[in-house]
Every structure is written in C-alpha cells, then in structure tokens.
Length: 355
Image 1 (tube, rainbow, N blue to C red):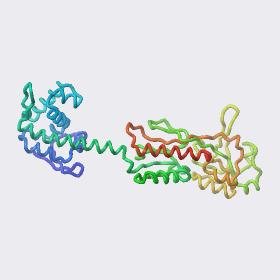
Image 2 (image 1 turned 180 degrees about the horizontal axis):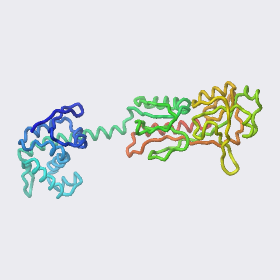
Image 3 (image 1 turned 180 degrees about the vertical axis):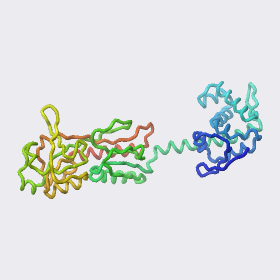
Image 4 (image 1 turned 90 degrees about the vertical axis):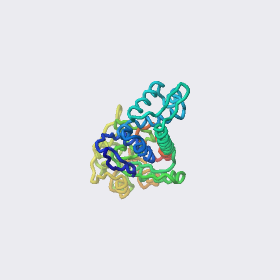
C-alpha cells in the first residue's frame, strides 16, 4: 500500500493515495492528539489491518471498544455509549472482521484482550483522552470571559452611546477585546463574522434573534440664528418655505418627513440645499444655522438642552423607531456575549431621557 504525506492541524498525516476520505473523517481526526495512535496501529497490526479508510470510517469504534474494556461487559458499555447491547456486539464483531484480527476472547464470565486487542485498546484509550480533553476545552470556551467580541453598529450609536458603554464593560472585563465597526447598512452578521449588531428601524425577516433595547424618537429642530432669518413653522405646511436639510440614511427617503395624521402617519416632501448620510455633519449644519433637520433625538439631545438648537412641531412629528441588539441563533451563546448584550441594554436604558 502506498501512502502520501499531508498535514492536519500542523501535524504530518499519511493517507492512502487512493483513499476517498471525506472531510467529516478528517475533521473527526483533528480531535485525536497526537496522531501517533493511529500510526502505531497501522504499523503494529498485520499489514491487512493498515486500511486507513476503515480506521477513519470507524473512528467512533475506538471509543466503543474503549468503553467495552473499561466497563468489562457489553451491557454496561452499551449504557455508557447510548446504544443497545446487540448493536455494541455487532460493532465489535464488524470491527474485528474489518481489521482481520481477533481483539477479544469472550466467555460468559469475562472479556480477555488478545495481543492485537491490547494494542488497539492502548490507542483507543489515547483517543478517548484526547477527545475528552477537547470537549472540556471547548465547553470552557463558552464560559470564558476572554477573547474578542465583534459588533457592527450604526454611526449615531457608535459615536454617542457605545464608547462609554464599552469603556465601562472593559473596565469590568479587561480580558475581553471589543472590535466595533460603524456601518449604517444591514450587515449579514453571520456572513461577515460578527457576534452581534445594533440596528435601528424595521428589521428584515431573518433567523436572527433581536432584543429590543429602546425606542428612539425623531425631532425637527434648527438653530436660533436660523429662526432669526425665518419664522418657525407652525405646522407641516409651513415647511415649504424652509431650507430642510436631508439625512439620506432615512429608510423612507431623505426628503420624506413623517408626521402624525388623524388616523395614520403621513409623509411630507421637503426640499433643501444640503443632503448627507452622516448624522454628525447634518447636526453641525443645523448648528451653523443652515436649515432645519429631522433627526433622532439622541443626536441633538445635548444641543436642545443647552439651547443651541430649538425643537419645533414637537406634537406633530410621528417618527419613532426601535433600537435592537441582533445576534445569530445559537444554543450555546458565549457567556461574554450574553454579558455584553445585557450591559448594552442597561446602558441604553440609563440614557433613555436622551432618546
């Protein structure tokens, strides 16, 4: 039999050039550390035994055989591996047939290993310990409060709310690294490798889990200097006489402003001489007295409080959107992500007056 050399997880691995080993089998073998157990079996058992395709196809038989010897009976081994006694017996018989050697002497009282069985058991035990070690390491990973959390957030949240929230979280959990990307588009968080996203607005149908953090109300406002040039509008009809600066990130359209109606909201088309998809630039334009803006309250909350901007048509504006933490469905969400989402929820709630 001719073997070719390859590498798995940085380790040399020899396989039959004619083998059609599946990816699943290769993945299964990555749990086996070191690989010497498999190599030793292929070299110490008879040549007919060195059929790596059979060994790899029946990797789980190593574990069944290990439990059989450890428990000393087919019935106890069956309980341990979650199979019936007859299935375990058939698996061992089939294994011996495939290997071409007898592994056990069976009597009504006990099981005795043959020379080949001792070799097989020694390496089966090594494989069991390696798998056990891998499971313990992986189970601990979910509870680990270290590593990296990747999130994507809209620009307003990323600039105004999250820096303080992340600083407080990092103070409490210094071994967790936060990687935050600012992006106003709806990112495919699974495709692009994010742990979670913060999103505002109507969510597209998806298999993601969404936790509502808060609602954000929108306002129309302008600088006192602007109102010195033009009287403040008393209703939406007066907006035709005003320079309305457009926020192109709005889903309803940059020039479509939403107002309350008798039965349902309606939009009013406005016009102005400045359009941008950057909320900070829009805010600064309003502060300079260029025109009116229709923006999330959180963007201008401090300006409204200080009087640098003045809110108008307060009772007529209808726009209110939900803010969500979105993450993929998983049965075993890492503890660090759970803690981070809860921290964000508390942070948004503590700033509710700004929204």
